[in-house]
Image (cartoon, rainbow, N blue to C red; front, side):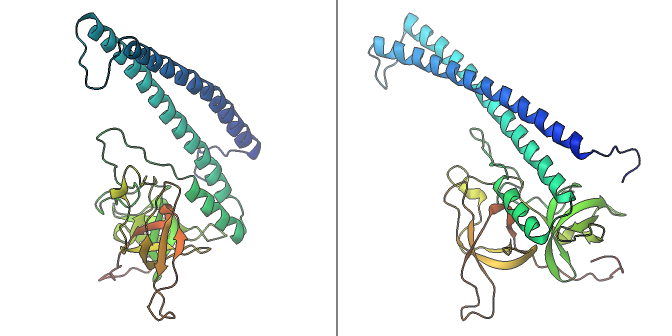
Length: 292
């Protein structure tokens, strides 16, 4: 344990979770109140339109125009307040899920429990909801982060170690800016670390892409990818056979497998969280004993 870092006891952690849940419950009531304010403003606008028989395409003038502009400005303000609150609530919910996930992963887990936890983590990966005219940033769905960008401690990555792409967590920084320490998520002892170069790591998506809003942030049909094989912590080469149709759908991925005549297995459903761009790891010219 790092020097000066206070250990959180289970009872303290449970109380912290309960406090956050209570705070969430109170703020959700605010969301309901905001929604009623929005509906009231919209009813006011519709009432003015009905009273004056205003149809689509009609351009009001004079006092009627001023009155409608005032109502629209007020409605826009309460709508923006509602959006801000809802985004804050979603961020708070994800933060709570993340704390519980990290706590469970730090505990002693049987392999079956770890697999179930990884499925839950994929399910609770937040959905990216773009604002008008906003383009999704890196790590939304299939949008990669540049290899030149540094990674952060705590991120989950696909790391190339000992000839395989494994699911790992960044736990430390190496001697230089492009070297990191990672831990295999399937290591029950949680004490074995690997030193891996940035070029041999692929960060996992931080957000799911919404096919209805940001289909360009998804891998296209027939794209060659690395995907986490179900019930394992290893990524294998595969091809996209079907893209998500809704925000909760995964990809249908056919994995490369010489046992099948066509060279690929029947497609399996893989969450967005565990599908990344295919990358061929190149061997190092000079190899250190502790570096992969």
